[in-house]
Image 1: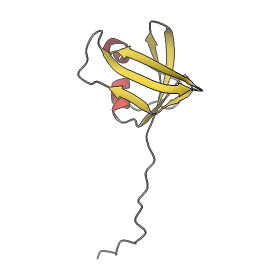
Image 2 (image 1 turned 90 degrees about the vertical axis):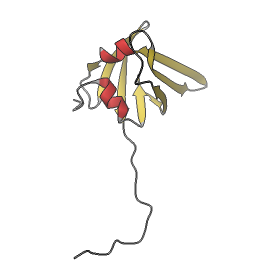
Image 3 (image 1 turned 135 degrees about the vertical axis):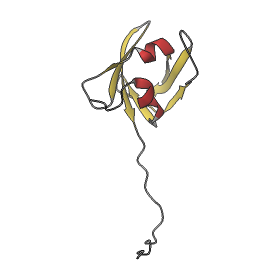
Length: 102
């Protein structure tokens, strides 16, 4: 279960999403959107097919926490979708060790 109280907060820290099991590294979050404006737009490739989902600010606000870690259920006109918010893994590329202080 997510520690973030709402989907908007989870999206702000996400680097990539899974939507209905598809990896979607390209998404736009408009934090200023309200009401019926598109707040979240997700794009991904499903084989050779480009798929696009748009969710209103109201849909993002109404999203429900899913059972899996960092997962959310969000509705649009076509039905319910499962979103999983993922953070990027980064490493330090510096091979030099930091000197001990003290």
